[in-house]
Length: 263
Ligand code: IPD
Ligand code: CA
Ligand code: CA
Ligand code: CA
Image (cartoon, rainbow, N blue to C red; front, side, top):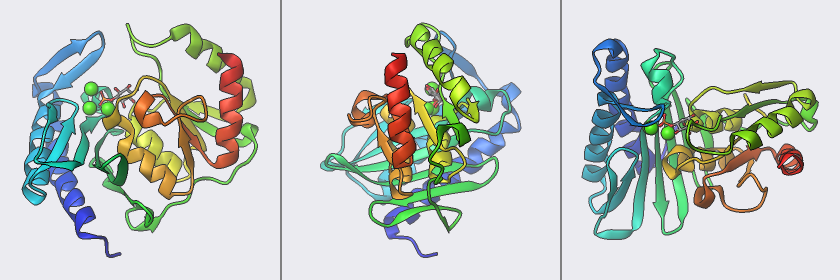
């Protein structure tokens, strides 16, 4: 499979930082870990991966802006292009040796995300999407699942964090959904939750209070795989609000309806 020069830049950067994360995973007990807030961990691995990604991406595309979870926003001379990067999505999993974490890289041109790469170095799964060109997992074209009935669906979610989010709302949503679906999952890495929807593994996914670096690459992945992505309200842009809901068009609509009734 031949990808564009842009995708090659993103993949090369993700793979190099990924090799490093994999090495760090082998010695997590030696990693320096600190708390950014209640149950909000960051490690030396997160920071090192972000520096490597910044180095590679800004070398390949000098002047592009860069938004990273750990380093904040670094302005570039080219105001129309910005990298949106989560160097380690799923830090809690990573620090527990759970191999469900990823590097997530998106490129925004003006107001539109035009490319996304999500890479899990633990199992070498590489997801790629480019606007108008489709989504791929290790060179296999992706398509969202086709199920049309909620009771057939496996749906992923995210839990509200300690001190953040509406816990009561989440419990009402779970109460409404649990008897209506085939299964509910909470895997702990938003980028991969979206990638799994793109791959048709999860039928749908919703989570609130996320950041652009958690979802920018995953959102284009789902769209390029034929899925629908929005805010949990079913309409607004999730990248702006940080509340995401996705699935095929039918399940997306149905889930938005059930979640609205639970609110
Ligand atoms: C977190 C993961 C998790 C989601 C959290 C995110 P991080 O990202 O994506 O699944 O529930 O809200 O903050 O901090 O591990 O990069
Ligand atoms: Ca984090
Ligand atoms: Ca994240
Ligand atoms: Ca992160």
